[in-house]
Length: 123
Image (cartoon, rainbow, N blue to C red; front, side):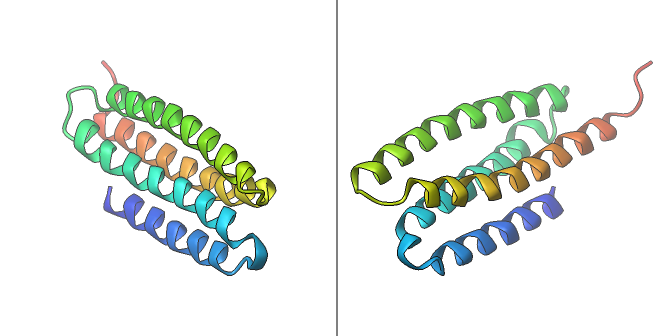
């Protein structure tokens, strides 16, 4: 769990740093990167809280995964609306959100797979 959280924190720092350096598109890029990073870190913490010691950790992890997917869906919609109303680059927002999002999804999937391996083989 700690390795996954550390990897996500490094990706979050990198994505926020790159968004900060994006010039004119800084504001929408920071919003996108912040949503992706914040939800990924919250998701990993939720995995630790709800799936770590559970009797059925994979099922609980999938519930967390699903809940965070819908949370991200709502936040992306709100972010696109906010960036669009401000007259800023929606493309910068989308790129800054989805590039780290796919990396975070791989980290979260790796954690779910590790939880499944920890359970052992079924009888």
